[in-house]
Image 1 (cartoon, helix red, strand yellow):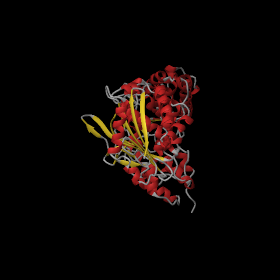
Image 2 (cartoon, helix red, strand yellow):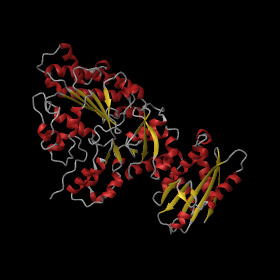
Image 3 (cartoon, one colour):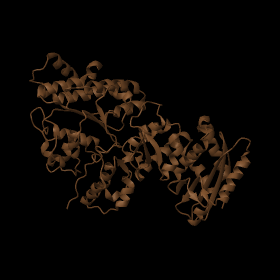
Image 4 (spheres, one colour):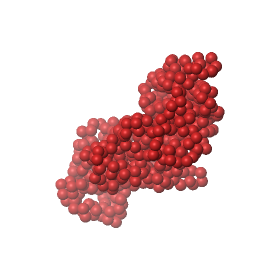
Length: 565
């Protein structure tokens, strides 16, 4: 039996079905959209979780083309075709406006605005047969002609969705369906390249004109990565319903269930370990459903001989995530070691992100990382007096790779050259105090602000600072933090993957108290390492060489002492 063809890079439902590619039936999405009482729906999901494919599926089910034809035959045997509901009477009956902004990632506002104008122009031209012989007002006809040229002025472009929906309703007798895919992609680019204000002002007017109280619209469906604050984009829209990944509605419509993954891999004739697949690509919680990353599963299924690899993290730039981390006032870095060690952190979840440069609040950072797919909900969110709280963790091994890459990039950009980092870390593992202290002290002086190291949580920052560096050693060591060993909890431990040839490391941090000398702080740290027998875990693992570091600090001054066990 020939293996099914995997739809790598194909986001068109029509193309996928016409050309016989493998398809996991998600047509329940069609049913749920029709059953929703909301006129406008926004569905934020991480990238590569099937948003565009689902939007083109909605178009394929509902659209009546200007010549009266449709492609509803593509749903033969799928849930949408075999399920009764409100979606059936509109099957192949509606005009559909489809815009996808996923490729609008320009570096200036002028280029972005032109791209939007050309995108609207192409859709007006696609729909133009509806208007050629229709009896519509001459002024409206002139507006449509201007929009189709791609050279329309801002005032007309702002009103384009309103003009299109009204005109289609008049000429077809049916209220159209408006689909806007990846609505926030230009906003991401604007944030990165510095024209956020212009982009937000335009899209606020553009979307409001087409979506707010529009009696000519049946439904509007928007997808994107983030649920952006109403103050940014959706001010004045009182008819929009946002179904984020923390909510149960549409929970099975994006991504893959475990049963779907197993069926897919079996259909491909692949011998696989579900535990291994799970550890790499599982871990997301949409509503109450555990979800797999579909892009990575499909890539693995298409090339099983290559093994389980981090496909998703390499499909797009991590600049926007890096921006969130660098603007987070070290919030993420202060707890990064717990996440990398496989732990979880409890945080408030804010479904409305204030998406502005250099103004991410603490809840924004964690929510940002959650909704972009870099963190997961370990369990369903809890509502406590009107606020949502959830336990967050790194979803799987693939996303852990992304965090390691971000830490490495942060280290390279802030901490001199990568060769310096390698030299310093080798000295750290080998217990060469003079070399490590020289490089580490220089990094502290040159890269840490006094704000970082003089706050009351300075010890946590140093802790995260060191763990961030040690992530570079994950090829040879496992980094652990705040774990029990002997009779207490060490600060940081490096466990060698080869305990015979590589050294294990234990680190204890101390902040100098008032009038305390560096020698006194180091003596206290050293005594804690010895009395609590922190090295016992490494010894039980068969380590033949163990390096222990006592590190004390006061502001940007760093003091240390090393011993070999």
